[in-house]
Length: 125
Image (cartoon, one colour):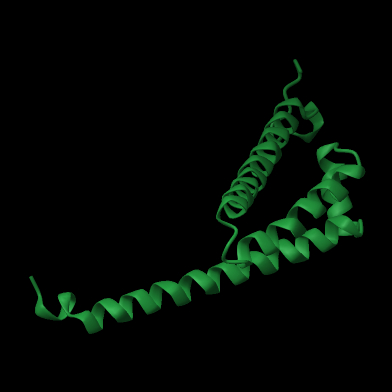
């Protein structure tokens, strides 16, 4: 085994790098949630347009916005392990389910498009 990799100094540098990386990405995530929460809570046009395109009611923006804003302190405050896990779960649901819904809508829209909108119109359709 390489002597430099097992020295206490290199282990300490790795720990410092990991901690700095964790807080950097956590801060970026918190900033993203804060911006999204503000957009949702104040019903800004960009957030409302997305919800309308998906067919969701406008009041859902308020619920999502409050949840995003509550996730920020849960992620940043070091003594909230249980709440942090729930915040990460909510973020995971939000970021994985939303693209799947968009993909399913795009697929259905593509499959049901009128014959006039196809590259090679099918006269039977």
